[in-house]
Amino acid sequence: MPTKPPPALEAHPGINASHITWYVTDRLKAGTINLYSAYLLMHEALRFERLLYLQSGWKQKLEISGLMDLYYDHITAKALGCTVEADESAAWFLADIPLLQEKRKHFLADRLAEGKSLLADAALHRLLADLRRRYDSLPDAQGPYPQGSFPFHLAAPELELLQPGSQPAFAPGQELDAESADFYVQLQLAH
Image 1 (cartoon, rainbow, N blue to C red):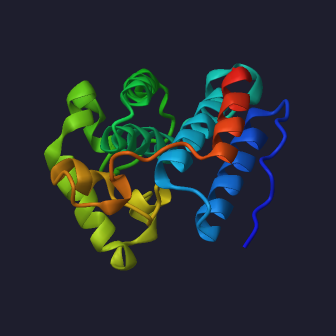
Image 2 (tube, rainbow, N blue to C red; image 1 turned 90 degrees about the vertical axis):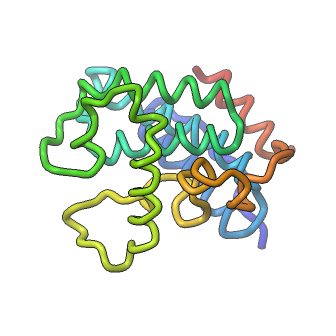
Image 3 (cartoon, rainbow, N blue to C red; image 1 turned 90 degrees about the horizontal axis):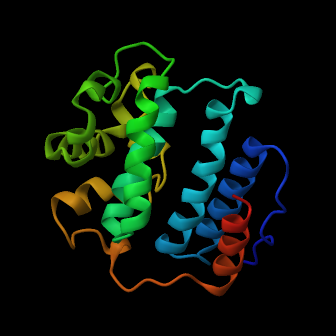
C-alpha cells in the first residue's frame, strides 16, 4: 500500500507535529518504515510540539500527556541506542517538569520530584510494562498510559530496558530508510 509523500512544513509548529505524526503512523500501518526511522521522525515531531508551550505566542499549556511523550521519547531512544536523542529528550523532560500545568494524581506526575533518577527507574519501567499489559481494563480518567505515546502499541521500550533483547522491534542495526532520511534532513534544517 503506497503512502503519501512527506508533508510540507508550515509556520505553525503544532501543524508540523501533527502532520509528521500522521505521516509516520500511515507508514507504520503500511509497513514501509522501521521503528528506528519512525522514532527519529517522531523525535522531530516532539521538538515542534514543545514549541507550543515554550513559546508564549502559541499559548498551549504542558499537560501530563506531554511529559509522557517526553519520557517515552527518552526510553525509546535508550532502547534503540540513540544516545544523542536520549540525552536531548532527558534534558527536555527535566527542563519541562516545572512547566506542567495539569495538577492531578497520575502515576508519572506523582513521581516528578524524583527528577533525573526517574529516567532510569526500573520500578517505573515495571509499572509501565504492567500498565501496558492491563491497558484494556484501565480507567480512562487515570491516563494517559504507555500506548498513548510513541511507539504506541508497536513496541515496549520499558520492557527492552528491563530485559535487553526481549523486544524484536529494537533489534540493533536498523538504518534510516531513504525516504525518511530525506525528510529527516529537511526537519533538521527547519530548526
